[in-house]
Amino acid sequence: MSNGADEPILRLENVSKSFFGFLAVRDFSLDVRRGSIHALIGPNGAGKTTIFNLATKTLPPTRGRIFFKGTDITARSASEVARLGMVRSFQISAVFASLTALENVKIALQRFRPDGFAFWKSSKVLHALDDRAMALLCDVGIESYAHARASELPYGRRRALEIATTLALDPELLMLDEPTAGMGHEDVGRISDLIRTVARDRTVLMVEHNLSIVANLSDQITVLARGERLAEGTYDVVSRDPAVIEAYVGSEHHD
Ligand SMILES: Nc1ncnc2c1ncn2[C@@H]1O[C@H](COP(=O)(O)OP(=O)(O)OP(=O)(O)O)[C@@H](O)[C@H]1O
Image 1 (cartoon, rainbow, N blue to C red):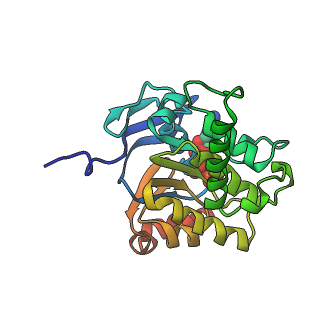
Image 2: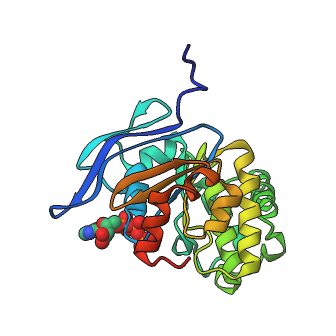
């Protein structure tokens, strides 16, 4: 018997993407289970970012269909999909450098409101917004930086701010593109804890190079190579798969 809860939150069905005749993703299917942390891994050039962009509708597929919460979103725009509840992190470039951390989260909180950026609002409403923004900064552990400009935040904290602006949209499916890229050991641990916390009440799909993060966090892992699915399962299963070992060794991937 099928009810909404068993249905995958995200489904890619026989999706292909070619760039000027080069098939970067070929006949790829994926089911992301509701409530899971699902990682896409694979050697450089495997097609992870392309699949991420296809799923979030940043790129149109050449072939295949994409479903979010059972709705065919193949022809939908990225912003429509975001409104439906699939929100991607946009790396640090999405954060306004000259605004404070608190201001950045407040802007994100107003992003999808029908009344938009209502600066004319009563001070009561604006205070409620302040409280909600502060709560989000607390959730990601950077409340002490609330009044610092985003540009002044250390790298790992800026990444946390960027995740807070994403959480402000209250996504059901949070899409994280290399959340620990470029980070030192301490920040990696913090972001990893943060992902686990935010995943308590939402689904997370992430592209991640750091295999120890993937091993620690993921319920399900899909391994890609040359645009195709090579293996899928828990870390224990995929890390023992000879095809996976061969793909990583063959690619001289050192992460
Ligand atoms: N816009 C594009 N135009 C042409 N080729 C592209 C484009 N985007 C990606 N590709 C090619 O598609 C293939 C898959 O790239 P993709 O970035 O998805 O891989 P990846 O697994 O995310 O790699 P990495 O780990 O290096 O980020 C690569 O061969 C890449 O050169």
